[in-house]
Image 1: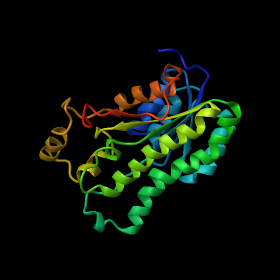
Image 2: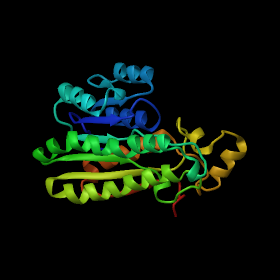
Image 3: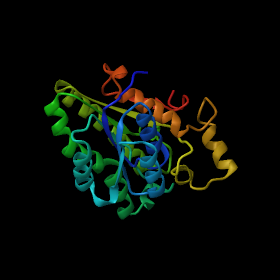
Image 4: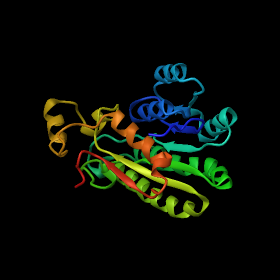
Length: 245
């Protein structure tokens, strides 16, 4: 794959799990990465120490402050990765509290709106840019008892396509990846409990017979934001071992 030397990216939720894998893969390809995080301070610091030119910014300071810090450090972004995401625990839809519902949509949906407000104008002015949203197979093939998480990821897939069609004339591409359940900090939350029986139930829905890894997502993400994918926009790529077939 071609070098992406000199490009600049912001990865939200970039200090652990899928976000860290995306940050690492982009840095390996020569991208200077600003890692936004609210969890994983130690791994964020390790990442910055290992990849010269990269920076870290605590996500809990708010999107506006994080955007200002990233812009001060690097100038305009070439790549924006909206990876930050959370879930509610598996339960009947009517049992999810309103506060929890609001939290899921604030992180999974409103954050995409906020980063667009802060970064899209500069991308449009430059006539180029790549945005990647980390959605989920849950937005395409929902699992029971995760209704509002599923809905938030379905929102992200629709937002990706809507953003793509609006921003295409400005030279900005917008795509998404849809990971299947994998070895990330959210796995236990999806399952409700991490037991051999519950893992077997989840694995039975994945034709390739294994959980995804953060590295799987890092490779897919790096491709979609690279020039190799210059003809791809509005794609929701299923990185799922065949689950959505």
